[in-house]
Amino acid sequence: MAAQRPIILATRGSALALAQARLILDQCRQAFPDLTFLLKLVKTTGDKQLTASLAQPDPSLPKGLFTKELELALLDGHADLAVHSLKDLPTTLPAGLVLGAVSARADVRDVLIYRDAVALPTRTPAARAGIPDPGSEAGRGFGSGMQPGDLLDGAVVATSSTRRKA
Image 1 (spheres, rainbow, N blue to C red):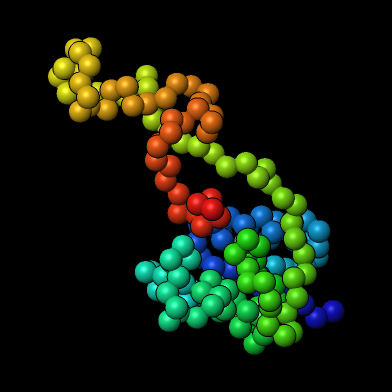
Image 2 (image 1 turned 120 degrees about the vertical axis):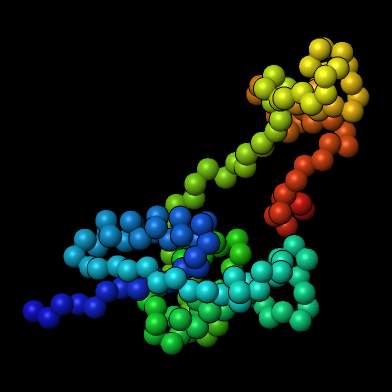
């Protein structure tokens, strides 16, 4: 019996894309142990144009900055499957492509990373001596177990996600 050719799974090379692709690759290998699956890294327009931003899109850039080349790899027969974050997938796919599967969803809760009031280093001699110093970082951290609702009015929360900003 002739050996079957490997099934090629295309993905971007970012850390997140690779983590997602490896999860899917493991699931495919478990579900179809007699088949061979290989990852193919695809560099997309968004990967090549480091100044491209989904948060502040440039009208001169094409749509599908992070998916176009994955779609072409599928349509041209250079890949059999592609893995991409569903939240970033355009709402319409090119003719000939289908959204074939969606993996089980992981915990959807985001995390909040904040300064620890106890471990936060103090920067001025006065603060190190326990004397309040409005110019220091002392007193600007939070206690253990803080929740987003505990933030004071006017607190600055940093994110690069358009979805989270909304």
